[in-house]
Amino acid sequence: MKTPFDISRRDFMVGCSAGIASLSGSRVLNLAFDVLGRGVGPNDPILVVVFLRGGIDGLNLLAPADDKDYIAARPPALRVTESGETVGIPIKNGPSDLDFRLHKAAAPLKELYDGGSLAFVHACGLTHGTRSHFEAMDYVERGLGAQTARNVHNGWIARMTEELTGSGPIRALSATDRTPDSMLGMAGAVAMSNPEAFSIPVGEPVGQYLRRLYAGGTAVHRAGASTLQAIETVHRKLKDEKGAWRPYVPSGGAQYPEGELGNSLKTVARVVRADLGLQVAAVDLGGWDTHEYQTYRYGPMVEHLSRSIGAFYNDLHEYHGRLNVIVMSEFGRRLRANQSQGTDHGHGNLMMVLGGGVNGGRVFGKWPGLATEQLDQGADLAITTDYRRVLSELGSVRLGLRNPDRLFPSYVPEPALGVFRAK
Image 1: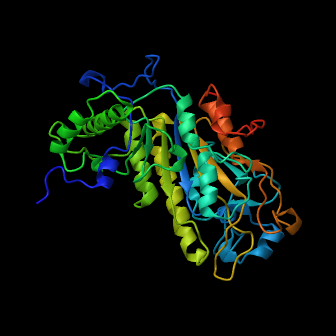
Image 2 (image 1 turned 30 degrees about the horizontal axis):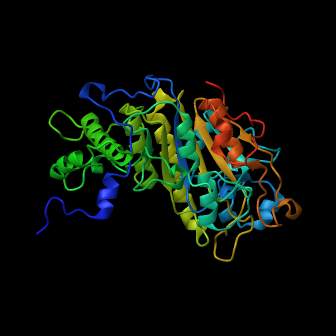
Image 3 (image 1 turned 30 degrees about the vertical axis):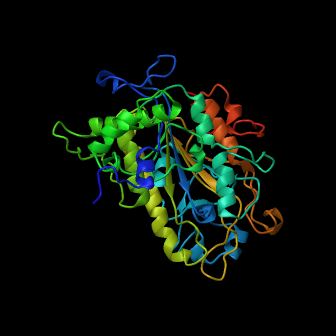
């Protein structure tokens, strides 16, 4: 028969995956203090990074509907068009004089774009051309380029958070069942897909045992103790006086769609609104590797992406001045369709940037064109903006980092694109 201490290694690690700066005393649980003694204030920035895993087809999300090379390369079902069943949503201020349009399922993105909160950066991405998902994600999440030494063992979000002042019971959150490599090497990252499942494995008897176990003074002891503190704080903040979880009611009339991204962003919003000291969150949405039957899969995925982001932004309407949302993927798809009603691994892609400090309603970046001689290796959308240029500008302009050069080893910062406004 199992005892209260018969827990698996995985359960133990899920419960103890975060090392959060420890807080003492019930009276300070609603506050977060950095090493200088300054509380995390109401104007401190919040960063949310949405990673679209699998390589989203940016040329089916935002593209020049009237470009003759684009039309020749794809059937109507795999592109945005000027008319017909796949007619796109026209936008203003594209990167060239071509007729750039959004996928018809991206209406919530168009609303954010027209409202000046959302900007796109096209022909953007990892300049080191690789078509391996694993290699590309490794480079992007660790913030590396082709010439960077391979002995960099932490992620760009981990390095960024080291530059931010402040601490709290949940300073960094992965709204999934694991922390991404962008948080690699970060002791204070919590993996929590659902607050109501964020608890001590097996229950309070194990909690009492762990409190005694982590009573020492080593770094491991402190990490374990602060994890327990984070769990207790979440329960304290999100439960009522009878110990039942309070139902989460989104603000601003927001309606999250059911599904992976909607649920994850709802978790992030719940933590933000609970004032748990959140500074950075990472969210994933997989399934973008559309080699086959993209014509059937892509539209519903774009709709879920767009509705989820729209609901999240509406829900956090009181935080727009602090909120910075980055949507990115490891690479794009080929210009030309394949024989399986899909697209294969490509190169250049787009990023989305959302927030109250974004110069929205514009598409940033130089558009390289889609003629064969303009494509990367004659096949892919060429990259004219290194993804690190966008993130470096985010760090220096919006996050106020003291040493933004630390974010990306061996990257020489380029002039800002003007995507962000200073606080």
